[in-house]
Length: 171
Image (cartoon, rainbow, N blue to C red; front, top):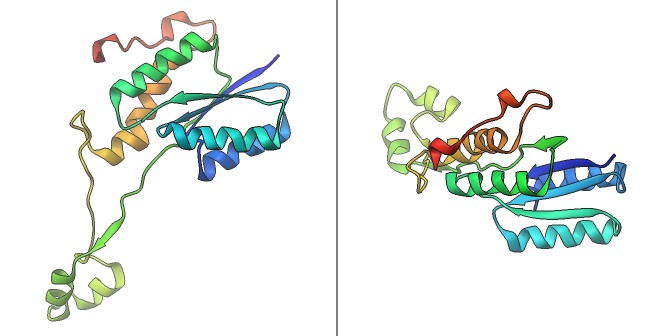
């Protein structure tokens, strides 16, 4: 029986390497779905995978885990395309880039916390987190909440229809 595998953030990095590895181990018995935000990059990743594994079944799915509406649409699409998911790899994510606060650095040079500042970066390294269109923290939504909604919306527990998620209240 063919295994259905969905990988978020599959167009580069660890997600793409995971897809390559999965196809290397089992090309014939696998339906692979690349769930990506950028469809142009997803198509390039799909082409690369099909170049090295021409007989593979590789589908694309538009998914932006930072957008609740995108996640709910993707969950519905998964339910329409597949009667089950055997494996769901929640790989997509972002990392905010730390920023160096020059003003705090010079202020810290002349304070009693200079050793702590150099040892830990406290006060001089900051990370800014944006707000999504849904009004949520960008890093939290992209890395965690979007994946939670996808799993809850696309998956059900076999033999336990009472455990399927009903996310209609979010729409």
